[in-house]
Image (cartoon, rainbow, N blue to C red; front, side, top):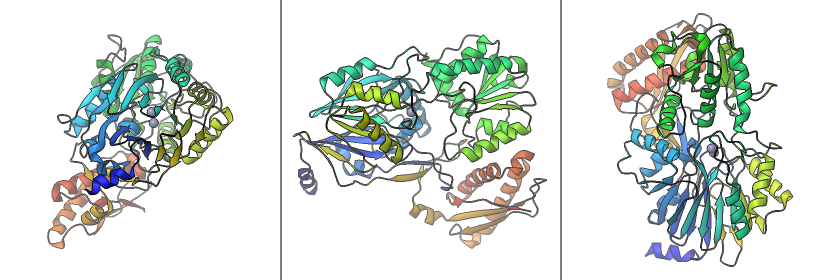
Length: 565
Ligand SMILES: [Zn+2]
Ligand SMILES: [Zn+2]
């Protein structure tokens, strides 16, 4: 009865857009559209935690609003395969198992995630393609092809009883895409002519004037560097950047080099894209991982994951000479073909320093010559074109920090293509479009960040949503390790301080063993790792986490402290 009353409060013939993540923050994109008793969810992304959130692996949107209205949620529709759009799917489907719509490549990556979480059997995945239409409740969705840094990306043109809503997903307007599939300007123009109620559009690159260069712009520089390289070349890019990977494979072939792949996500994504015929790898052009080490360095390009210097990634390991497949030496070339994501500068430059210490030629973003990376997001001129084509009645900037959404709003104002109103929203703050043609900002719904511990990368563990309550139940473990900065040797045996973790009777023995784990971790690290405290702390955290979880079935927060002696 109570539920019926609550429904009455909602005017049944209005359309609500409820942003649940990605507005006023970077990542974790998610939005709900609601008409009457039907809710459609667009994207379900994650956010990588800031470094001060130690002990937390990923952050996902709070879906309390969806759970409160669970019987109304019809489906989740995905725009593309990036983590900030699909990364939360396994955590959300566990709670709210609704059909998931997405393109072939997007669903292939989702399938992999669900498999790792043992959720694939129960999931209802529905493959769609650009140009197709799905009917979901009162919503009719056309998938419109857009260009971006990964493949198989779509915008959504959603016909609702009150008019068409367009959600761009992430996009740039690339006139010469690597896969030959252009940005579908015609579809946007068609909807613009028919009339669009509201446009929700990507704000990521609004601070950049001009046009974002085509993905093909990187070819010239890659070719130049591959030809000039005296020995082997290691290229690191995002493992979802299938266009970039394709170009590296092409340029390698053109310059007489074979390619090898290292890093789990790189190998997995290449396998998936190749199996879907979305990556062309000529026969005989691949060097197997076990042959990379011995392969003629003058004829080799290695594609490695880890552009952001993630502590356990392939490139980070290579930088400190702790990778099984290869050791890089003087005269080798390393190309970081990616953006330096704000917040990661420190660890990336530390990794670059390690590479320079090995007398490796390192190329990264910020150089003066032609780009070795181009963005996947629209700059100002492309955003103006989109606004001019769509000419929406209402415009809502999405996907961006507040300053970016604000500047996107200002840009739309300047273009003058918005019929009625530009609305600046924050995550959790809905807007109601009414049948009489108005839009109103409404009271916020529950929204925010939920921290998740997904286990170490090596093992697939049961997922634990770790809120503060849970944290206080499992306690805190602080290993204190004294390391000589110059020699990398431990001054004294490690100490471990715990709070709220174990009762003292069986705690003593476990802590003794935990100390041994730390000693072993340090002994098995290379000299460079031992003097790089970010790396060594992360290794200790991961090893101790695994050990303590196995021994106690608990997941305390682990905060290693290194003392310089
Ligand atoms: Zn995104
Ligand atoms: Zn994206």
